[in-house]
Every structure is written in C-alpha cells, then in structure tokens.
View 1 (cartoon, rainbow, N blue to C red):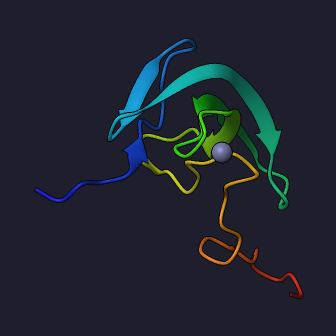
View 2: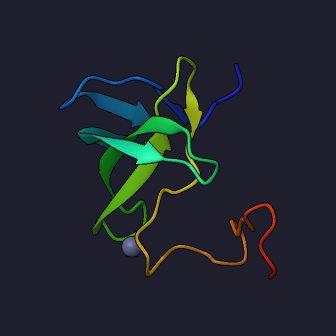
Length: 92
Ligand SMILES: [Zn+2]
C-alpha cells in the first residue's frame, strides 16, 4: 500500500489526524474568500516540525475529499527549493 500524505478535508474543530507519525490538530475553521470572490472555508491545522519539533501551522481548504499535505516542517526547516509553488498568474 502506498503511503498517502493527506489530511481529512472536513475535520471537526479539535479533530486530530496523523500523517505517518506526525500529528495534526484542527485548531480553527475559518471563512475565506478566494481571489475570484467565492466564499469557502479553510481548516487551520497545528503540528510540530518533523525535524525539530517546533510548532507550525498549515491551512487546507475544506472540501469533501482528503487534502494533500505540502508542509511538514517549521519555517526554519522547510526546504524552499523542494516545495515551491508559484501561484497561477504570478510572476516569479
Ligand atoms: Zn524545524
């Protein structure tokens, strides 16, 4: 079985999820307006850096399917070369 690095799309507030052995806690559900003006919700997760254990936060969209985890480390240990995402339309 292939390991999938995902979190539930619609956790309850206070819900706990694990990505491999890393624990993520849903600490907030907040409304969000997208660039094209649509209203949606985001889940704010709190976790601890896979390298040093420092707390960091992650935002994922709330939706009915699992969401991919693209961040598992604190700002200091995040590798900017490995996971850079350039938003559509942005000039790099
Ligand atoms: Zn770290």
